[in-house]
Amino acid sequence: MRRLTPALVIAAALSLVPQGPSLAQAEEALSLVKQAAKVYARDVRGVIGFRALTDSQISAPMLNQTIRSEAFMVLKDGIPVKMVMERLVTNGKEASREQVQKQEAQTNATFKEGKGFFKAPYDARYLESYRFELEDCADCAPGFTAIRFSSSVKDDQHGEGVMILDDAQRVREVRYTPNAYPPNVTQGKLLLKRDEVGKGMFGVSHLNMEYQGAMGPLKGSFVMDQRNEGFRRYSSLEEALAQVQSQASKP
Image (cartoon, rainbow, N blue to C red; front, side, top):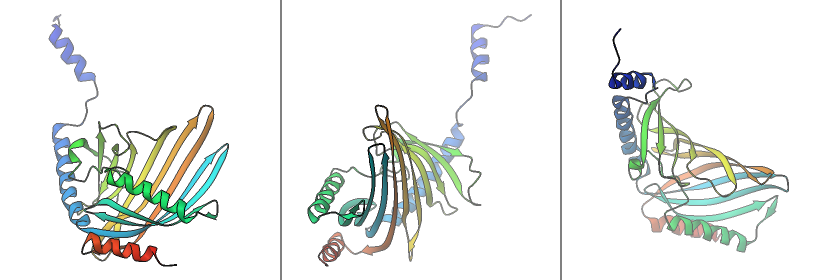
């Protein structure tokens, strides 16, 4: 009987360990994402504004709260640069102008710090922070491709999940979980959908967020549904902000 050397034993053992995606598959996935990044860059180039209509629900033993907000968003090359809060309603009660302005100021301060938004794996500026592999997608439309992504950056602006590309290499859907959660949140998931939002324009038409959390024995949930509409391109950031201020000054 042939005696196995230590090297052969190790090789045999390794052959039984499930292997990750092949180098060829990883390279194919990366190639597709790089193509998608070029398409995305064209989609978001310049200054774009839209209205965000958001409904949120907090459900907990000692707190049940519904929140509705309406805001005007301005993005430059896909990055949020300004939000004007138009309306904020909590449990059916309109917030005061001071409360609205406070929320607006907090959000804009976060944007100024370069935070408060998902660092998308199909954005060339953040692509190197992610790893990719092809993913089976039984529910994908014909010609669509699923790519799994993950990142070692442990903050709430990076995550892991799956992106769906159409046959033009445009990202149409993203399902992901962030790598870090707000305090007391234990799990969560987000769904982002990108569609044609105007003539020759593609953008995020819908965003859904579901979080679960706990404080000691008390458990709760947070659900948010955001719909974006009225997309428009502007010739400059100044033009977009001028329209924002004009809308905000209307009674």
